[in-house]
View 1 (cartoon, rainbow, N blue to C red):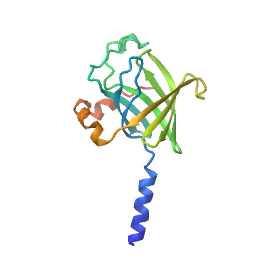
View 2 (cartoon, one colour):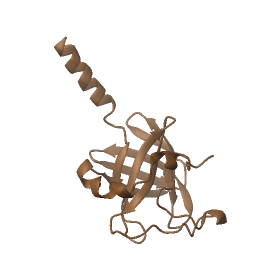
View 3 (cartoon, rainbow, N blue to C red):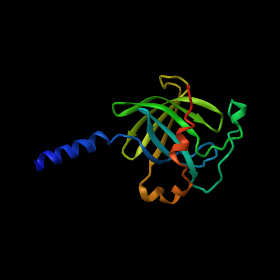
View 4 (cartoon, rainbow, N blue to C red):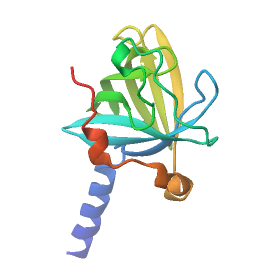
Length: 162
């Protein structure tokens, strides 16, 4: 019985090992500012939003958004990675919104060690795009930013609709 429990425990740990839910440090964007983002699963898809800049800078307005009604919203708490679907060890069919230029790109993600390898592209195949690397954060690394984190219930209300 003890051996069965150990095997079952190891199997459960292995099955969830590639789940990307958690906190990450982004690459430096156009202005080199890095942000803390949280990935979460909702209705069998994965999403991410940012909630803190590591340099302590304030959230910025979404001034490049093609929807003029959204240009005054702040980037903090806005879901900007959406509709990712798990496919084996990878995630595909997602989209990522770029606050620096107001454009939305196709997105594929490959988890590797304690990093996410993101492929953002203008074409669905990923041929024409850019690779980004985001670092997974430990509980200790993210702890000081958590007071800035909005409630997930509020974030879910703002998931982009197709």
